[in-house]
Image (tube, rainbow, N blue to C red; front, side, top):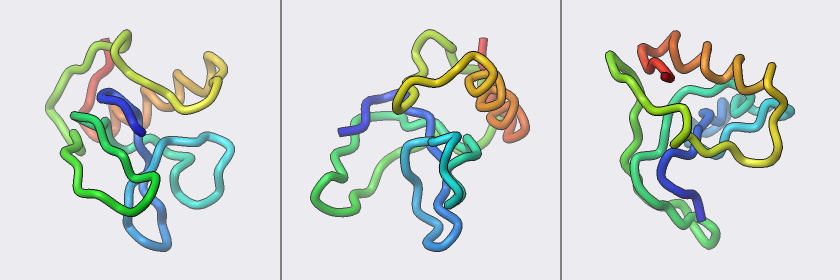
Length: 89
């Protein structure tokens, strides 16, 4: 189950979105979107609403990262979102 505010990356091979993973090599290593509501895709793909581009400002305290990221990884995710017009405050 992905919670609202989960930072997402886009899988290069399929164009689908999944939880951002800075250690991945499938496209999800780059943060590109923020999940707007809950999404349970454990059994199958599900439609979901995401924030893909700005201008938008999101509260950094409300962002959810999968796993345990280091501060440099979080900073890189924030910079990648900013490139899409999604500013983290």
